[in-house]
Image (cartoon, rainbow, N blue to C red; front, top):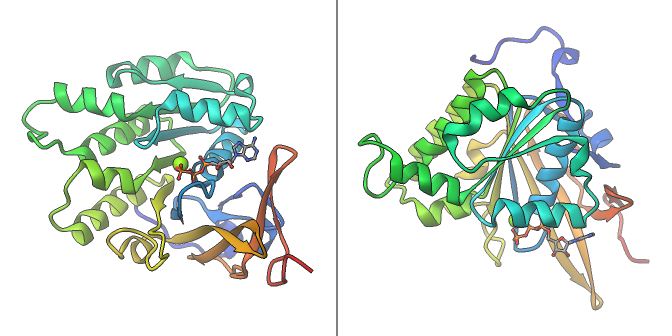
Length: 271
Ligand SMILES: Nc1ncnc2c1ncn2[C@@H]1O[C@H](COP(=O)(O)OP(=O)(O)OP(=O)(O)O)[C@@H](O)[C@H]1O
Ligand SMILES: [Mg+2]
């Protein structure tokens, strides 16, 4: 469904980032249906931050899809359990075959549902696919098919692709700007709140590999590990967020008491 004209800003539905101290600095969160690039170097909690949003929305009864091309779905889930997420509060569907997805979705009732699929699932799908998917593997098409399948089943509100960078490793883009543009448009048309995780190069010169990911996205969140006086801090900055008055200051990011907190925005963290 293409984006409709809104009459009043209160009509914009927002999805919180579930970061205490930051959501109130961005009108309550991300406009629903937008695409946000979550970028950062290794270990900056890109996966945890996106997972945290999906988990909390699923707690509210929503359905979310997390595709991990980077680490296995089980490894991701174990990391989240270690961080204190309680998987018994939501339906967790670990998808092994795409053909199961509708049946599993119909069985998941009563609570919100988090569907987890990893690269092994996508590989299987590429192998079993017909000529629509060429010998090099049209990975984007497989990713689209999963999303479409869930949407047609009437269940998909949020989606994370972890990560765009891993997608680039396994799938060659002849014309990244065009192909990414159409992929973003596809997600926007389906009205899915999307997080695309992007590994930032160490020199932090770009937000994504092709240097276009940030222009095409509606929002960009940058995560960093910053060394100061032999101490390393986690930092978060909302670089851009369409349809949102956002505080673009750098905030310290902490995971404490099973939630993210943003502190000292615009002020030095160490006195
Ligand atoms: N229980 C915990 N509490 C706080 N932080 C934790 C906990 N467990 C792990 N971490 C931190 O989370 C970091 C990894 O988080 P995450 O996997 O979300 O990062 P990432 O940016 O996705 O990493 P990658 O680049 O490997 O994909 C680890 O480096 C670790 O320091
Ligand atoms: Mg990760």
